[in-house]
Image (cartoon, rainbow over all chains, first blue to last red; front, side, top):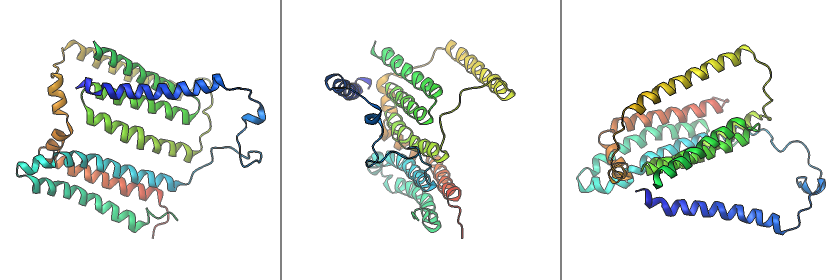
Length: 123
Length: 169
């Protein structure tokens, strides 16, 4: 029901409100006298060199991609985990386990492929 | 009374996020505006009593997919996009296509809005989309679809490794 989520909405609004209020309060109460040197990014006491947005290695992308696949996999396993008790009571426990087992087995092939190809190795 | 208010609140937030994404020059800022849109859409799902889809929207889209978007932006090392120059034929084609899609959407909307929608009672809708009932449907009626999704995810895993790992043996 919609009203069940009211506490959640109130919490989100409170959290966002608190964060913004504290930020604005700090700016309002504390002395705020920016200068060019004070506003420059701190890099171990040296003058900053180059841009902050360096190019990233593709390795990060690979890890993120594999993560998303397993993330989506968990999304499909979650309803099974919740409804498993109902399946057990209705006598379909083994059948549901077999169906999700085939699902996991298909994805296990992908995991084996990743490991064999070195997709999970960092170097 | 509450439901129309919430719908318009989140709909406006979603549209503002989408506009911010289009308008901001910095690609990273665009991505962050898109997170706002995705959150607002997740809240819209919640108001439709689709709790599981709403939570998954935040977990997968606002969490994982946006991280992937940010990685791509950083991989390509995009600077702020330059201001739009004069017209050329690509922009003309883009404009015509955009207007065509908009017209199509408007026609579909006007056709659908004439027909009165049949609404489930809220309690029934919440029950039908509960995680447990989703699981029951997913493993009985839609068991074959589940395995096909498994094959799709397998293809995604292999594709990611194929694309990113250049040194094959």
